Amino acid sequence: GQNIDQPTEMTATEGAIVQINCTYQTSGFNGLFWYQQHAGEAPTFLSYNVLDGLEEKGRFSSFLSRSKGYSYLLLKELQMKDSASYLCAVRDSNYQLIWGAGTKLIIQP
Amino acid sequence: ETGVTQTPRHLVMGMTNKKSLKCEQHLGHNAMYWYKQSAKKPLELMFVYSLEERVENNSVPSRFSPECPNSSHLFLHLHTLQPEDSALYLCASSQDHGAGANVLTFGAGSRLTVL
Image 1: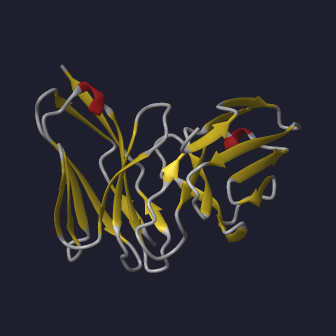
Image 2: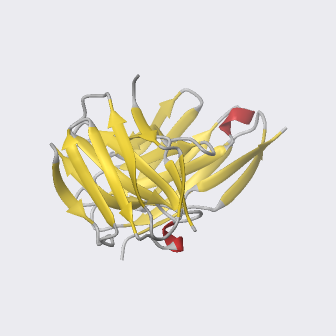
């Protein structure tokens, strides 16, 4: 079966750096997405990786290793507003999106 | 108004009621989706419409009935639901369905409680 694994919950300190990991086993690969979802709000797109390597976008970066079935989302200079759930999703060979259950990130002062 | 708008934001219904969820997108996208989001579970894709035609139906019970009258509007008709159907129902749209990045734009969801 197809599976996406990510930690259920993480806690970090304001101003610090946190890395949220995502591992996947899917039938083929056509890209990996990260979305952010604040409580009671819509998920919003953060990043898309289809080739190996690091994509940087301001305070957020996303890394992909297709050979290892692994990605991470790196958040720098954490702010209180970064408290949210982070969803990892992989598009398989049929262009179906396979979702992880999300990582709830709690930022402490 | 821009983006994806869902109404109502909250809905409480009995198991014998009939209600509908509405989704509207003003992005000119060609594909629209219904997802179910339950606590601590992955998003479950329910239905996909591309150019107003249903292209996927992921073994969803018949008590959920989608309708896509045009490319901007999507409905989810609900009847004789069960308490386990209580969840957040998310609507999303993307430029197209299938190959390509096709980033999803989500609505804020309709929180459904079935008593």
